[in-house]
Image (tube, rainbow, N blue to C red; front, side):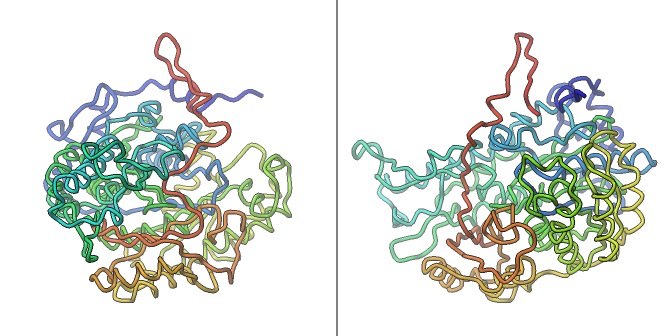
Length: 556
């Protein structure tokens, strides 16, 4: 049996003009900046104008995913569509896809099947230019740091201690470590340098946590981009870059409005990776959505050990958010993978492997309950799933005391999301307060160890000499009260991608520590995680094409 691809389904959809979608969302035309017929930016200042109570926030997260993902975006979109079909005033708030994974392993990232946001080609490619603006702001600061050194180095910057990398929105391993400034005095000061992917840039993190233009400029000013010869931090404000960086980001700060396949409003804005950053859409987008709708469905990247933990411990702290429910997405296929089944055999029925792998699901449920929030499980259905395999998941959820619903949104859209919607509505608790993993007053090492032991179930934390030295330096400089953002593999609770299931007692290896003073957290790099990913042997880009009429194919 032949199934339509995601892009074929998306291209067959007759979209409504974005002005109509704006009316559905309650956005007056004066707040709308249209980008063609089907995309628009919404002036974030509407936040100060709309006088209605905030809606209820629903967070969608997942178990540890296999390489192709877990279907979080698909579930998020389908759940919102399902709630709309039940007459609820709901908005979906998503991250913007990065070109890196679009052209790398995962392909498109706008949902899947009959639970997508459209126009999916635009969303997956250039969209409204937000990522370009973020990359440009990042690279402006990089250029101004090197120029300051070239022009007499008035800030006494040590070229060996520049903490700011250039970035681009592409998986390009060749640029991880480079030497630049070669060719003589007029071409700059030779030094070791490198690139991060745009979604790992601190500018992206700042952008996603800022509350308005003034806060954005203040956060950009606080970015520590280098150190002097005597070890003092140098900020973007001292370099004189913050104003121009803010100017580049001014238009990008307004959230983007698009629609689902069922013509329901969707806000898409910002997109830090959860394995190397904090993994959530912008605080402005979430707050805007809560102001417009009674219910907001949003997602946090990768597994709950990464995206959900950072959403709750970082974003909720800074933005004053409190989810009324958490949806944990699981698939039979992923649980079989955690149960030791090889990728080619994931479609074969194997209830025992599902049971073996369900320890991963049980661990995530327990962790989320530890945050003090109501939890339900969504089984993202595949045609190859059997009733026996499903029963294993229902049994696990029953033992954990959480409801479980089948999500058939990929095949059936909003209709297939109604059972999940009913389950979510039944557990909503708007009075639930987030129980954070650690207190901000604790030392940085205590905060790292709290996440490592409570969320990852590690037995101990090991630090390289360089990482320990950086932690001591940051504490001495007054940054010890910041939250921690742990960068590690998304495939495991540990820092070893091959250690699937629910490992415990392992060692979390802290390789490097970086300060994100503008964003307001300390990045803790564990294991072999890369902030500039590489392309796989067969990149998704090899399957993407466009015909003479401009019709794009191959985006999943």
